[in-house]
Image (tube, rainbow, N blue to C red; front, top):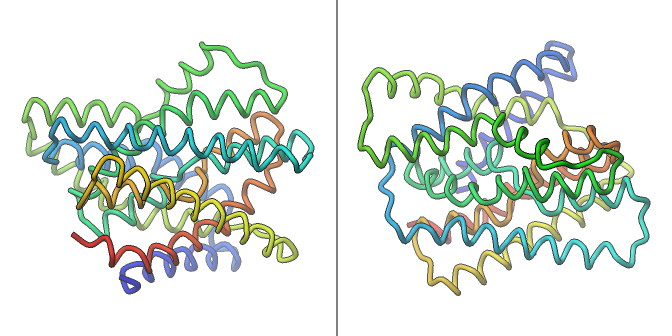
Length: 298
């Protein structure tokens, strides 16, 4: 399994190297991010859900995700309470500890390890987390920051998120049993670019202060281990096996969402804290998965 994870790390290193030598800059990263947000990621989600075999018992996947994020919310608040961090840093901690980077990290990991059927399971798991991210976590960010939260702002952010619509369209196509060849061929072309683009982007966005590596290493290990613990507990509670158990465990341990950085920027939270946390958590997650994924093989 390490041989499957290693190419992911190498492409990230490639992106980081291209930035260091000046061949790609921040403007290029924004362009890649736009292509991923509006084309590649929705195509991956839509194709996976439209072609997957879905049954009613899979409702346990989004339910599992909801339990995990609620557990992380409670644990994150308990950890934060005695630290007395300033509000910008406290808010940054909360929005990173509670969130999962499904699209950029979880999806390529699940796709390479378990194929499109496995990816469809993680997308369903990620659905509840995505709604929680764009509502509750967004509200937490505004509460710690300076912006005012309204239902209108939350709703607008939700409906403007392409992958949110891709989930529902994919489920609709699956329900209808309709997979028009021209559409599927287009989705194949767009989706095939996803893994490469997202890994290059992660490499481009890698930022870390050497002096703070130990601190963020400890925080990343804490998040991954607590997430895995919650995932194992929920898998046992619902008697999940096979791809469903793999999706819950792969999803529960994910590093913080890149959207946490956008929320931090919007609400004047500690963006350096967020980016450093993400930069350390991503490679830590992949190293942990290299050990755990062989045990989850189905």
